[in-house]
Length: 261
Ligand code: PGA
Image (cartoon, rainbow, N blue to C red; front, side):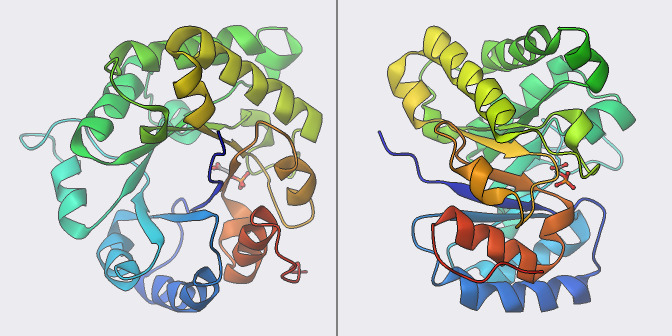
């Protein structure tokens, strides 16, 4: 089964509304030529209303970087799935390693968020990955498989592979310039797909998209994307510049758009 690749920008805590407007205005005409690849921009809450409005009639999906898995109530500082849907948001990053490490999100909360996103009609992009110490200590697969299994415990059996996206993001490669080799990315993502095949069957494993994240940039995207099980990228630093992000989209769809410097 052919999976549609996805290229996703994760702006993290960057850009004002004005900067977001300039970026999306530049992205939209490029996105019109990008058949065959799903494009998502995960932006700060403060930009979501404007970005969702701007992409409304396009194929670009406006995404949030986080949410809380209750519909409403006494959760000061949090934002719910219905609030995101109200703005026209279509996807949400769940369990990014920065949220796990800096804000103490554990596997249980990540699993609850994943299930709630799916139930609400948001596409969760669920991040998993190991630290350098875990990789060097031979615990990479324990960590990553544990994260995947915990998420699946909360996901109802009838959920299809197209309703969830995983992003394998080795923590040592995030924002460091230190990318996993294409072979390491394929090894990890291939193993994740095999695990999903064992747990959820062929239909799920063949349709679920698994992205790579961690210092992806125009200079290394071709080799990573060429790997059999890699279905696209979740990109931080190199997504902040719209030229470089559109180069990544172009590479994903196999176009010959010029690679940004
Ligand atoms: P990076 O971030 O591309 O800057 O390494 C990726 C991510 O954290 O999603």
